[in-house]
Amino acid sequence: MFKQSYTQKELDEIISNTSKRRGWDFSCMNTTEGVVTWDYLDVVKQYLKPTDKVLDIGTGGGESFIKLASHFKSGIGIDLDPKMVQIANENKKKIDNIIFCIDSEKLENTKEKFNVILNCHAPFNPKVISRCLVPGGIFITQQVAKKNMFNIKKILNHKSSKPTGSKKEVLEAGLTILESKEYDIEYIVKDIESLVFWLKSLDMLHADIQTDKVVDKSSVLNNILKGNLDKRGFITNKHRYLLIAQKS
Image 1 (cartoon, rainbow, N blue to C red):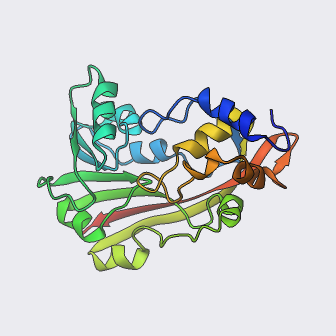
Image 2: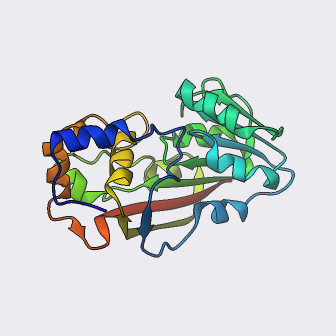
């Protein structure tokens, strides 16, 4: 549930009772959303074969990659954040066909070639992707698109960054685009605890907006809430795009 505004004391108490994000896990949030036109994991599964070697760039805590492990032969998940890699290794438990390593989208430490390269909400370099794919290899990325959380960004005067890996850059890297699409849907956060957890979890290392520090101030939180509440909860939007490409 929500109030129209919160005092600093009330916000401090909410924050003190809010757990920190572990890896890239937002499952504790109480939310609902409009109808999406694809599910990232379902899309990826369509392109995986039991013999594939797969790379996941920006794997976070490995949450999504681990769910795909039974669909390919071997996989490497990389992330720039050592804490994410540590959590991913903890999350994988007895899964033995995946390893997690520290590396950036430049893949300085990753020299192998892959049948499939995955990337979900993380930076990527199309030329590096092309270099690391076998001929006929598939690249799949889902990205946070420009209009995501539009009302929050407007309140915080946040300038949207350039989208990661444009179609032009992908084509110039020698990849053929098989599919490209996007959706922009309503996203509803149903209680203040979930909203604070969400905003406290977003920083520029892991997202396209930094709200983890500003949400500590009740004046900022109240500005975010103003005009964006109805009986369902806090209303914002989720804007995503999906791109699937293949190396010749």
